[in-house]
Length: 297
Image 1 (cartoon, rainbow, N blue to C red):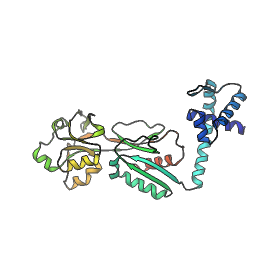
Image 2: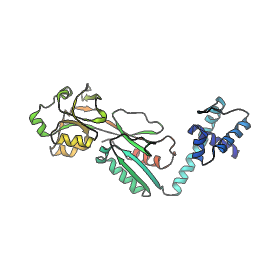
Image 3: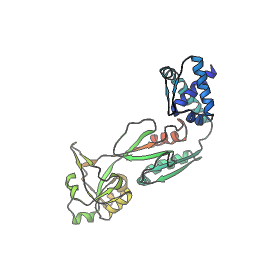
Image 4: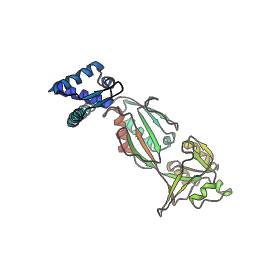
């Protein structure tokens, strides 16, 4: 029975990784050993479990039925083993994380500090950039991303929190330009735009639930949201920025919030990680911590 459980686990890993090589690397075995164990299981059952081609592997109908019946058991055992492993020693290791630069001014920083305090043996390497990084190609363990479009949580993706946005300008801008009365007025304003969002329509929702979508043309665009805010602050134009950037300056009237009865779509901050990351490793430890600590801003 123990041998068959091991063979089932190897079959499951092979399907997860899509190849004997991938399963072998994950299990620290050779591809030939992985193939041998699956062949033994097929011989015992008297039926093939995998279709093998030069490009990919796929489960047969019998393989799907067997793996489906055993998956709950394998997952339960793997989960319990990982939980015991984590509880038996303090988590340690290194994580590389790419983060939008604008989040360096947000409560996200406090959360990272709290994680570091709770898990001091986990070394975090943070890459703050508004350039989109590739997870695997650029060598990152987790990618934090911001988008006005929300995705459903799925393997390798989790929504963390949302960020409200304010439409802002400097007081001196309004001395020489008309104050916008509606989102449509922004079409003829000195619009400051984030380069990755260039030419993307902006939707505003009124407190009465009316919605308006506009296509303003920018006079300046930048790949850094913080620079857009600074440009707005010195009177270069109107910008749509995360609310936490403007909250303190708004109190002292160094910045003016425009159209307060109209709300732009919030930005969704999400975590993304490789599908083959260990289910209970450091990646999931940090993602779970961010999820529990996150609140909308």
